[in-house]
Amino acid sequence: MSTRQLKKMRRVCLTVLLMLTVCCVCQGKWKPAKGPLMTRWAKDVSPTNAHAEYPRPQMVRKDWKNLNGLWEYAIVDKDAQQPKKFDGQILVPFPVESALSGVMKKVTEKQLLWYRRTFEISKNWKDKRVILNFGAVDWQTTVFINGRKVGCHKGGYDAFSFDITDALKNSGKQEIVVSVWDPTDIGAQPRGKQMLKPKGIWYTAVTGIWQTVWLEAVNDAHIKSIKITPDIDAEIAKLVVNCSKPAAGSITVEVKDGWFMKDKVKNTAGKDFLLFIRNPKLWSPDKPFLYDLKVTLKDPKGKTVDEVKSYFGMRKISLSKDEKGITRLFLNNKPFFMYGPLDQGWWPDGLYAAASDKALKYDVATTKKLGCNMARKHVKIEPQRWYYWCDKLGLLVWQDMPNAGNYKTADREQFEAELKQMVDGRYNHPSIIMWVPFNEAWGQYNTVEIVEMIKKLDSSRLVNNVSGWKDKGVGDVNDVHQYPGPIAPANEEKRAAVLGEFGGLGLPMEGHTWQPKDNWGYKSYKTRQELTNAYLDLLEKLEPLIIKGLCAAVYTQTSDVEIEVNGLMTYDREIIKPDADKVSKANKNLYKLLTGKN
Image (cartoon, rainbow, N blue to C red; front, side, top):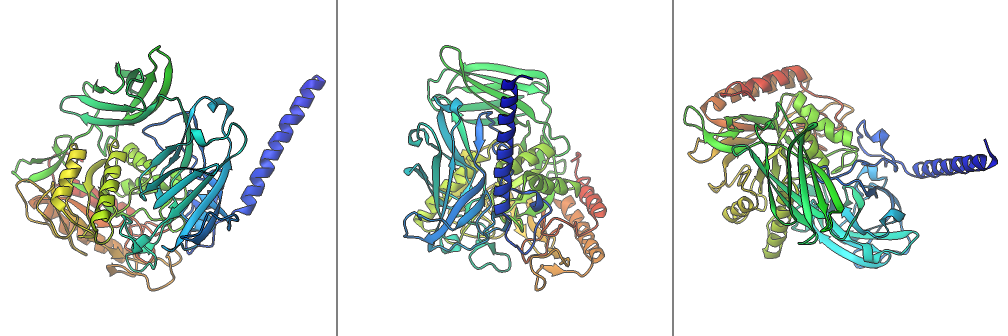
């Protein structure tokens, strides 16, 4: 080996050693706060691997940079200026109140939460536009790059982006500073079950960044969004591609079934695409088949300027009458009974943010393991990765809109803006088959108009006008709640009868609860055997209701949440509380009561 080669090897070894040292120092400074309860995935979380997956699985780009990891943070008075000195470090993307953030501090409506970190831009991005993306930040966000304000956003659940190119320095470290204000239940913005003083069915507040933050490099002309609508009857999928420039060039769309090309279409930017999927493989909980999609944008000279990868499922959700003349839910033109848990998406160590992608997948996989084909995502909108696992593993989703209290005029405008963002932002997921704008009259207003608004945004799915109370006779289902239940609403000519919540059978498991005593369930039991027997008894009572016309039922709930112990699993996901095999068998028996196989 030459002297030159030896010197080069030494430099490489020193660089690797330095990187390992920096990594160890960073990890040494950070550790989770001491929370009441942790999941098994918490031990694997570190500043170098916090939600490292590409966060937008239906519009994937190769050229990106993850900004999750350690940031500086400060909590100051609402009217104070940007702090010169920060309080310490926080692990993004975990909310500041969570143990996994490393902070676990409360932020009130009278305070601002500030974040700061630096990053560097790759030399390969020199002539590109740089886009800063946030998966979700709760609730009002202002972003500064190198001291320059680049944008503001209101909304706690939807993704948003800023083009930060013009605020970047030519080289060296770039600074990002983010301020967040969140009034939680003092305000009237959509917030789900968050409260500054949690109790009963109301849980710990979530403030700040709680989904992945990342950078992307794009050309001036690039793909901004894609919208996919399947039509199994016509054997086509309609695709709309939105670009940054109307006359950006040509777009080529490729659809593949594994290695086999199903269709390849070329069109000018801004035009709709009809993708022909002959003899389509239909997506269902039993066979959740997904087609691969690639969209390529070329400039007028034929040079590729952007490319994104995606997927879609060919499935249809509709209402129709069965052989007895009962209006039922139909999946892919067959009557289909839907059953699954109320899924609140809370975690003891990360609150709104699961510890990892493996944790997100576990909840979906366990729901399937228990024989369920559906989950109602309750007053929370999840990161895209959760819906990806529902798409991939085959779990139908009823998607709630997070609610608040009573909406005044300005609050209604914000609610409707966030509702639109929910429908647009989760539109492409085949697993989502129903939108639920209101739960049990929380903030309910202008129900007829809201249902019409959703139908205009998305005519391909069902709308549940309100889950629970104050049904206004519109939408596609009549939804009732009863604890422990079950009950069924009367059959109707144009709407399906569903049971939107029932069950709530409680069992606290020592060593796996949020607090050691005073836990709560709608109806509590002392042993797993008692709980299993009670659950099986409930399902036995469901059977005659299904035969008479009940089309779906939602059991409360996937897991315990804080002091609630109604879960099929403990809050830390360590124990499935009833007998899993018996539960799975009983759940699957429900599907046999209808014509067709689920």
